[in-house]
Image (cartoon, rainbow, N blue to C red; front, side, top):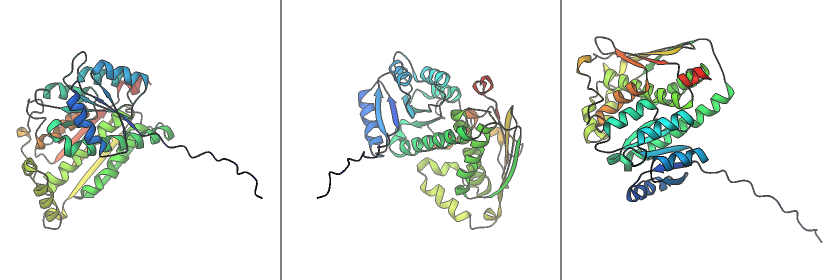
Length: 315
């Protein structure tokens, strides 16, 4: 007879990333929860105001904090500032509604990683959270392995293919962290700004696809872009990227071969209704997440500067 079998220990089940949803409206909490449940790979917890959310983050840091802007006792801006100061590795994503535009812009400048207009939650919330979380996780692993560098310079010539943007931005995020210019959250924010600038150079610069096509949805916008990638002169144009990083700042220059645009007509991202417009997202994020953004007179050369974060300098 065979002897009694030795009991085996079942493999540990990895814990799901925790997303802390903060909103003073129970109806809004349920609505957001139903959207997030579609993903299935996250654990969702809730807080009713900024004070409750900050206490929860202090007790156990979530993978991501998703917050409304207008709340009693502590609004979204104050929450972003406190989390950024105490827990810089916890990314914060904003849910913006009508009337919260100005405070949302201030929160982006204070350290929020991204935002989603409330009327776009159904379509945009999960992709935005996936992007922010994947960026943070990859950067965290890289941050633990590589440290320090005195100088890094690189040049790239890219076809107008948006599929080339994520790997290049990932490289730039790693460069920023290795150089000690910013922490994981700062690299995430700078990466989003770089992604927007590169896509602008491809879509609006080389392919001359107007952002106005996105006001009614993305279908017509992307259809025209695909068509023009195989047509002359659009398909032959390239995006040239130069990056120079030192311990004090990173300078990124993105040049397209399109006809350019009238720089004086760039909209003001602090306008109350700018945050909710499909065509305003890129410029808003670039200006919020970089210390300096400037164009040449013809509008086809964008220079962005990311200076060393104070928290990184302190470390």
